[in-house]
Structures are given as C-alpha cells and as structure tokens.
Length: 556
Image 1 (cartoon, rainbow, N blue to C red):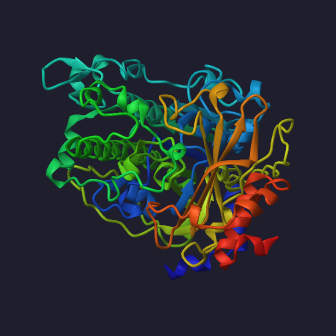
Image 2 (cartoon, one colour):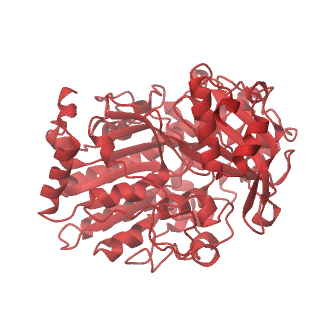
C-alpha cells in the first residue's frame, strides 16, 4: 500500500489531464436498492460477494458513506441532483422536482449536455410521479430508459408457499423457470446493460451508463439456489434485536411495508413494536443476504463484459446504493429511519488510471467469480477512506473525474439555480486514502413523521401529513438527531419546537443503542442557536461542543 501515498493531489490532476488528452472516460454508475454495506470488503465475512469484493480491491472504498434520506425516491432524487431533500422538496414519492422545487440539472443530464451518450437501465430514478413517469427522459437520457418486463410481476402472487399455493410473500425464493417470462427483473437488466456496452464498443462519443438493480429490495424474489449459500442453521439474529429503552417513539420505524406481505400477516405480529418471531427473523436475514449474493453475481457478469470489451481501461465505475436496510437492529426492519443501518451505504469508486498508476491492476481487471464455486474468495483490500461522506458528493466527484467543470456550491436558497451542488467532490480523497481521516466531516440525513407516536403511515407519510422532521448529523464520533415541528405547506421546520432528541456516542456505542440525549444539558442554548442558524449549522455546532467536552452553554 506504500505506493498509494505517492498519488498526491497534483499527480492525480496530472493523471486526469493525461487521460482526457486521449478522450474523456466513460462512466458506469451501478446503483443497488436497499443495500447496506453487507459485503466482504466491508468486514461482513459471512456475506459472499466475490465480485463486489474484487471491485473493491480495485477501488477507493468509502467506509462511511451516507444517504440523505432513507427511502428510495427522496434519496435517488437527492443524489442525482446533488440537492438535499429540503431543496428537492421530495420526502415521499408524490412530486417531481422540476415542477415542485426547481428545474435542477441532474447528474446524467449534465453529462449529456457535455457530449456524453447517457443511458439508463432498471431502477435509477425512482419510477412514477417522482421522475415524471419517464425517468426524467428526455432531459437526463439520450435514449428512452429501459425497464425489465418481468418487473410487472414483482408484487403479484408468484411465491409458492408450503401449502403449494401462490402468495404475495416477503420471502420469495423461486424456481426462475416457473416465473412469468421465465426470468427476473435484475437478470433482464443485466442482459440489457451488456447489450448496451457492446453497442458502445466502437462509439465515438463517451458513454454514461447507469444500471439500477432492484434487489435486495423486498420482496425477496430471487433464484432459490442462492439460499443454499446461507444455511438457516448458520444464521444469527441482529446483535441488538430489542427496541432500545431510550428510543423516542417518533424515531421508531414500524416497518409497515413488511407487514403487508402475506407470510408476515400470517404471523399476527402486534403493531407497532412486534416483535417478529426469532425463527422468522432468521429467515428474513437469510433471504436478504442471499439477495445480496444474487446482485453480486449479476454485477460480476456486467463488469466482466466491460473487461472483455476492452472498455474497463477507460471507464470510471461507481457502485453504491440508495440507502441501507435494518435487519432487526433496534427491533426494526426495512429503512425509514436515521440510524446508520438505514442511512449508511456502500460506495466504491474505481478509477482505472489511478489504480494502474498505483500498481494495483495487473492483467484483467474484473474476471467473473462464480459465487457457488468461490463463495469465500478473498482479495486485497481497496484503498479505504474512513472519513464521513455523502451521496450528494457523487455528482461533483464524477464531473471532476470526467474533466468537466465541477458545479458550483449551491447558495442557501437555490430553487432558482439550475446547476449547483450541495455536496463536495471526493477526488481529493484519492490522494492517500489509507492515512488521513477528516475528523470535521459530517453527513446530514433527515426523515419525516406524521406524529409523535408510530402509526400506519409513519414509515412513509405523504407530504400533507408530515408534522415532524427528524434532522440528523453523523460525524466519525457522534450521531445526533433532533425531531422538530415541520410545516408541510411552507416546507418550514420550527427548530425551537423540539419533540424529541437522540445522541449516540459512537466510540462506545457503535450500534446506536444507548440514547444519552436526555442526560445532556443543552435544550435552552439549542433554542438560542436555532433562532439564528440553519439546522445543519446548529447540529454541527453541537457536535463540536460535545467533541471538545464542553457544555453547550460555553459556546454562547
């Protein structure tokens, strides 16, 4: 790893300029759905992801990357526009940012305007109203986006139960040959992405290809053979499966979407806290990890094709997810919260000319690894960045790596500004990623609620029903969240009207199980700060105080 430290920022800029002199690089953006960093390269040795681990070994691995809201449409709209949810004004699935917020330029749109051929396969933008029922075509894409035909059967009764009948279940490992169309959505998307790569092999213009995988999003409709990788007797429960005693009710996610599935309904689990019976918890975890390995195999096929076509040497590959997914931690399932398990995502950035310079890539970059033959294949560690980063950073990062002008920082009120970023380019992190942690870096997330107590729509309230917003900051040492009154008509938070708070000391409580908010004397000075500072600045100031061991009063 010593060679990594030789890549100074100046050297990196020279490498980018050298590459650009022979043509701009291609971009392959791969986005999984609901994927927490449950990968071997992130320390999850029991999860079998040889192809993603191989990609990680040839990438910069951001170990602390966070989404801005832990639900699909708001997160995707956020990182594809590089604006936070308060700027896109999308907290649910029911509005299109160009109409309800501002005519913001998107990441693929920016590349398209700079001469790239932009293509979308699978779930990239969230479908429906949130992307104008068109995946933002033609603004963002050169050709109409592709959606797999078999997706139409995703929520239908295609899961064979123990009674031999078909159900709409949560757990849905299937014989693919028995499925409608005899395929599954992510299989179709992989085939289409491979076809598009083949079509671009001799193209004169660079391409921007975004591939969105639907898994491990529920239902877990996956090829049944992947369950064999995870024998049920080897499964374990979450390390903290109980609802924490100090957790405010407003912070709890009652996993309503899970409850709608027929196999979960049959459990007759009480609302809102459950719990799900332990044996079924084990099966959920088994199916989730099997779905992760399924996605890994498809990503491996895609990357292997990129390699076979000779495109890997000039293609930046970025792999990430829209948010994480709770697997029983805090007595919660799914996303819909501000905890790390819901907001933390994998983020791998492969820059071929940087890896080649560092002596990491020899021969083929991405040979395919069959997870059934090589389930425990191990690779050298990628370059780790432990500093906290955000998904809004992706837009400026890819722009800089492609030699495009990095969008300027957004002003405080940016609704009339078409092109700007609320993130920061991560290119400087390629200098010496193993040896420097930015202790001042902070990630911001938020989540809406309709009420102080859990109710049926707490997971995903419609905009008119939002009454409380949970604003959260995550540093390397703290997770700090405040739940405050929110006016959905004027999109205005009242930072002085605090419903509840959460404070977790991550050096002694990495699982965020012990809320020490009530033991911190800070409510009065917080109200003073909130009258003069935006919420992100207020919470950041408090983290600085906690870190210095000061009472917040000492800051005023």
